[in-house]
Length: 227
Length: 388
Ligand SMILES: Nc1ncnc2c1ncn2[C@@H]1O[C@H](COP(=O)(O)OP(=O)(O)O)[C@@H](O)[C@H]1O
Ligand SMILES: [Mg+2]
Image (cartoon, rainbow over the protein chains, first blue to last red):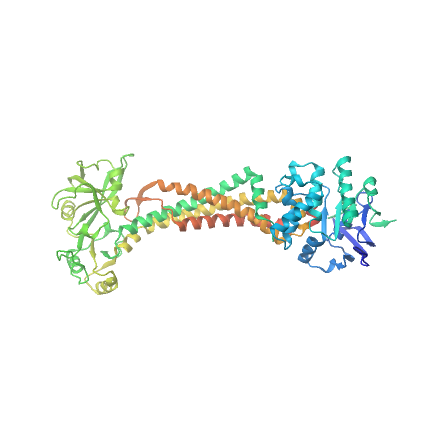
C-alpha cells in the first residue's frame, strides 16, 4: 500500500495575477508534498491564496513557474485537452455552492463524469447507484437539485466527485454554505471517505472546527506556507 | 462522449417563455419563407399543368404573351401542314388556331372590373387539351355566340352562371357551360368558338396555333425547320415551355420579394436567438465552469450551446412549416402581368419546401447561437467558476 510517490508534489510554485497593469503576487515559491491517503486542511485569511493553490493542484488554472506533480504526473506539460482528460480521471471536485446542474436529476448529475469514460450505460448505472448509496441518498435518485436541501445537494456533489475514483479530491469551503448540522454531516462523510476508502483530500476552509476533521493542517498567509 | 443532448433540451424547457418567444420569432420567418415558396410552386405547377408535353405552341416571335401575338393566315397554313403533326381517329390534323383577347368582368365579391383571358378555339382545341372537362351544362355550339367558363372564373366572377349573358366584343354571349382543367391556367379563362371571336373583335389573324406532335421527340426538328423559313417570324415551343414562361415574371417577383422579406426577418430572428443564448450563457456561467472542471472539453461546451440554439431553430422551423401548411387551404387569384389577366392558383407544399424551410430554420439557430456558444467555450475555468 505504501507508495513512495506523494499524491501531490509541489516545487517552487509561483502564481501572480495582473490587475490594471499591476502584478499581484498570490503564491510565491511554494514547495510541499501531500502524501497519498492524507486529508489536508488549507487554512488562512481571506485572500491568502488558498483557492488559487487548490485550483492549480486541480489543474483548472496554470502556474507562472514551478513544478506540479499529481500522482506522479507532471501536469504542467499537459496540453489543454490532455489536462481536461487528466481532470476527468484524477480529480474530484467539491464546491462551496455544490455546482450541480439544475436541469439534471441527482442520478444524472452523479453520472456526468462517467460520460467521459468507456463505461456503458449499465455499468454507469451501477456505479451511480453505489455512489449515491454511499452518501446516503439512494432514495433521492430522481430528485432535482431544487428538491434537495443544501446538505443533500452537497452529498450529491460528493457522490459526483468520487464516482470516477479520482487520485485526489479537492474541496473549496465545502461547508461554507451549510448550517452547523449539515456541515458536520458533510465533514463526517469526507472523513469516512478518507479513513475507509483511503481518498486523498485537500480541503480549503476557514472554519477551525472543520479543519479538526483533517489529518493535517497547512496555514497560508500572503501566498506563503506558515507552519 | 459529450454533454448529453437532454442537458441542452431541458435548459430550453426550463426557460419556456424565452424559448417560446424566440422560437416564435423564427417560426414567423420560416412561415414567410415557406409560404412564399409554396406560392411560387403553386404558380409554376398551375402553368406547367396548362401545357401538354407533346403539344407545340406557336406565337409571333418575342411576343411573350398570346394577346400580343399575331400569326397570320399564311403562317398558320405553314404550321398546319408540318408532317410531324398527329392525326385524330378520323384522319384530321390535330391543330387549333386560336384567338386570345382580354375582356373585363366584375369580380363577384368586390365588383372590381378585372381582365379575363378569353380564348377562341378551333374544333380540335378540346382534343388538344385532354385535361379539360365540361363539369356543368354543355360546350358551345360552333357558329353560336356561346361561351363556356373556367372553374376559377365561375367561382369568382359575377354573371358567369349558366344561362346568364356576358357582353363583350359588341355582342351578348350566352354562358352554356362550366369547365374544369385540373387547376391549370385554363381554369381562369373563358372559351368560345374561334370564328365567332374573330368576327366580334374584327380580327383576321390568329393569336396562336396549337398542334399535337405525333412524337414529342420531333420538336427540335420542327423548330429547326420552321426557324429557317424566312416567311415565318414565330416562336415554336412545347406548350409546356410556353406556359412555364408565362409564370416567369410573377414567379420572379414572388421569389425576390419572398427572399428579401425572409432575409430581413431572419436577421431579426437570429439577433433574437443570439440575445437569448447570450443570456443563457451568462446565467449558466458557473455551470460551464463546473462542466469544464469535470473534464468536458471546450468543444463539448460549444456543441451543447449550439445544440440548444439549433433546437430553438428546429422548433421554430416545425411550427413555421405547420402554419405554412395551413396555407394550402387558401386559394389565390391575382393578376399575372405576363398575360395581363386573372390567374388562380394554390399554395402548394412539397417535401422539398419542407426540407429547405427546416434547413433554413436550423441555419438561423446555428448562426444565431454561434457567438454565444463561442463565448461559452472560450471562458477560463476559474473565471467561470467564480460567477456563482
Ligand atoms: N482571476 C484573478 N484575477 C485577479 N486576481 C485574482 C484572481 N484570482 C484571485 N485573485 C487574487 O488573488 C488573491 C488570492 O485569491 P484566492 O486564492 O481566491 O484567496 P482565498 O481563496 O485564500 O480567499 C486575492 O487577492 C484575489 O483577489
Ligand atoms: Mg477562496
